[in-house]
Length: 113
Image (cartoon, rainbow, N blue to C red; front, side, top):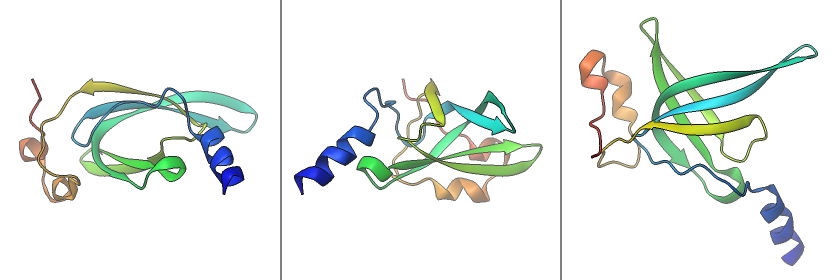
């Protein structure tokens, strides 16, 4: 059991980003195209956080050209360079899946002051 604990502790990032569900974040993702690498930003609202420890993930949703796009990012992935909090959101739910059915201003999350 101790060996398993040491392995999982080595996989968890030390400087984990601090954000909550409802926050608008900009995720910088490392993308490999052939032999080249580049960093691409994905900005949207965090609608869910799942699991914990090594397998922790978060889901980010944004609307691109009128189409809702969601991506699930593992927090401890080496491809996730950094997560910047653009705006703090004030929500009363752990999961914001109801935003999927909303468009325009109804899909906005109030700002936390």
